[in-house]
Image (cartoon, rainbow, N blue to C red; front, side, top):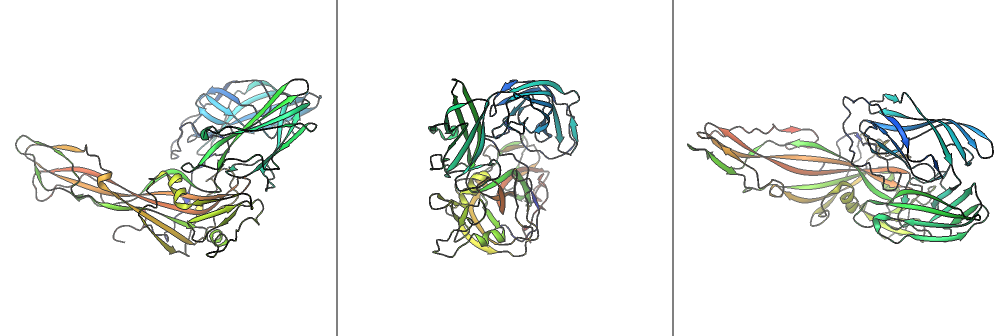
Length: 516
């Protein structure tokens, strides 16, 4: 089991989640080392005329991977409204990188025209360029910005999209599965006759939810009666992408569409950055006798005749203040958290299974073991046939550094948190890990001995809670302990003594280690 008294500061890699199906095209976060040169250039846009809420792609060269730097679009110039008004524009946004030659600007809306404070229809005239902020902090601006004229066509602006029980100040960052939402829109640049609202979730293969209403002047609203509900997150997946589409039909026969996406989450989940640390390297141990090469040499194959078993386990170190405020006595029906502004109510009697609520109409439950299984990507054996124990730690020195764990985190776990944690474990054997195809050749006149070395691995994750507006709070840490093994064939001129293994010496990187 992992020792919850070790004081480690855990820094999680930054990840952007605010967009439907917001994957990074296979890019991975790499350690910061010597950074390559960057010369990002914009060659063209996919369109130079669009309504707010449309998807705009940017084509160019040398757009860096996220591990190298973050790429921003910079617009400088003047926006000329259709009514003759003029506004100075100095606007930056971070598009999503598709590959080295494509950026996807999926934030052209939906809440506002990025070129105008008034949401007006008109034309932007000026330049567009890239700014790359490299991983080491260096800023690289494109030397020759591209001149561009971009027309903002009649549009449907989203005035609000949030749970019916929330009062979010800005657009929500993430959705909560199972919650009812209200959606308010406004037509700009045309007179609408009707609005059709649709919600789809491609990954769920569900029929889109559609609601059609007549326009009330230039505005429309839907959802106050519970007719817009985001589907619950299915078991086995941490989240899914949803696409919200508004199609407006104008009195003059025109059709104007706006779409935007977001990820839909459970109110409590595990965020894991994908890093694996080698916590401990155990000393190599011989697992065979002396095998002679003879006069002609001998081919030998590794066989797990002495399998070794270890417990894979994880422990949860909750933020003390959060877990105390969200733990109720056995048999109590009290739900805590709804009193917070835009809060989600949580209740638990054991710190393992949580019930959540947005009021009498919306309820659900989440299990910590399932969250870890999905978040860390471990076997479905979690919680099956294992054991559970509770331990207490009140002297934890450092908490999670979660300022970059999720996009726009509102708050993080306290630095000196200590609380009840849960340990779960199940067995894994070296015979399940080491390939049956490992073998070697003992050269003539020598002896060979098979060795096996055990490595203890550590995956570190954050337990994250969301409020109704999608803002994240890190409320606990998850330490997942795994094991793997390495075989080796050592050769020597005599045996005994046993030939020395080629595997590395024992090393302790994260306590507690063998013998401590």
